[in-house]
Structure formats: C-alpha cells, structure tokens
Length: 98
Image (cartoon, rainbow, N blue to C red; front, top):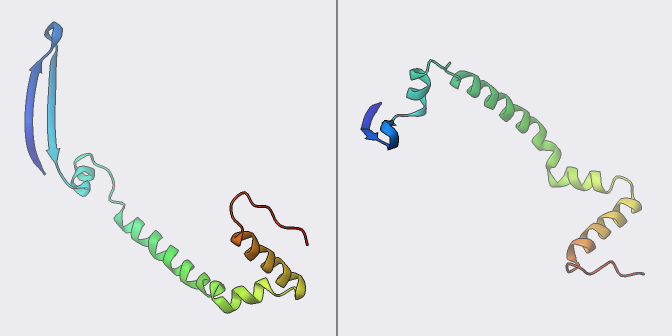
C-alpha cells in the first residue's frame, strides 16, 4: 500500500478540501479496514459449485437431450419440428397454416 498524492485546497468560505489517493490491492484494503478474509469461503463455495455443475453436466449430452425431447414419441417429434420451424421464420412472419 502506498500513498500516492496528498492535496489540500482552500475552497470558498474558508472550507478545506482534502484529497488522498491510495494505491492498494483489494486484500490490502480489506486488511486496512479490518474486514474479514473471505478468500477461503469463496474457494469453498466455488469448489462446491464446480462439483454440482460437473455432476449435472451429464444430463445435457446430446443423447440425453434427444431422449428427453422425443420421449413422448411422435408428439415430441412434432413439437421439436415446430420449435425448429419457429426459429427459422423471419421476424414478424407468423407460422403458416397447414
């Protein structure tokens, strides 16, 4: 932590304006203000999030997605086709009647 600049200005009415620029890292600022070190807690939370995401990632393989989408047979295939055709339409263009 280093003090970079210190300036005192006498403003209107005899008021004093003090400006102090301090160059420090976030860790140094937390230590200076007596705030707790949250880095171990952040690492634990991120590790838990990573573990959960990796555990759930298997549900989003292409095989599982197709199985989920088409599990209802022809009805699921029709819904998927409507989804893709809706994406392919130009903005403002409605679905064409069959």
